[in-house]
Image 1 (tube, rainbow, N blue to C red):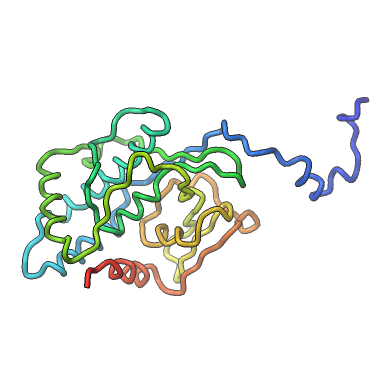
Image 2: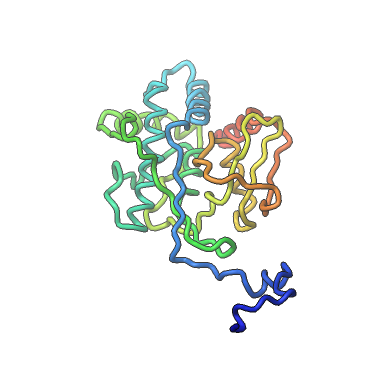
Length: 246
C-alpha cells in the first residue's frame, strides 16, 4: 500500500484539510451568471414616475413603456459589451459610448462585469438571457432620439452618469451577492465571500432580483449578510431621491 492510499486519522481534521487539502483557485474555470433583464420593471418605473413629477406640468419626451424598454436595452448592451471584451463575441445591440443614463441605472451598469474570485476560485462572468423575443433586444433611431430628448429635459433636475467604458469590465463582484428571499419586512442580502465591498449590496436591494438563482447560499456558507432596517419601498425611495439635483 502506498503512502497516498493510507488512512491516517489526523488527516480527517478540518484544520488539516483546510491547510493541505483545499484546492488553489483555478482561474481556468469560468462560472456564468445570467443577468435577469426581463423583470427589471420596479426601479425603472419608479425613476420614470419621479421624472414625471419633477417635470410637471411639462410632459416627458418618452412614454413609460418606451423608457422601460430603453432601460432594459441599456442593460443588455452592457452585458454584451462585457462579453465582447472578455470573449470577443458579437457587437453590442448598439454603441452606447457617451450615452448619459439616470444615476440609479448608471450605478448598476458600472457594477456589471467579470470577477476573479480568490476565495471561491474561478472567474465569474455575466451573460444575457437566452430569450431574444423581447422588444428590448431591438434598437431603433426613434427610441434613441426620444432618449436624447429625455436626458436633455432631465439634466438640470436629476443626476445623470455616463455609460461605463468598454475597457472597464473587471473586478466586478456583483455576482457574488444574492437576494435569497423576496418580500421580507427587513430585506437582506447574502454574500458568497467577503470580497464584495460594503457599498455594493444596495444594488440588490433597490433593483428586482438581478440573477438567476442556481444555488441557495446557506447560512453556514454565508460569508457576509447585509441587512437594512427599512422596507424595500422606503429604501428605494430614499435612494432615488438622493440623486435629485438641488
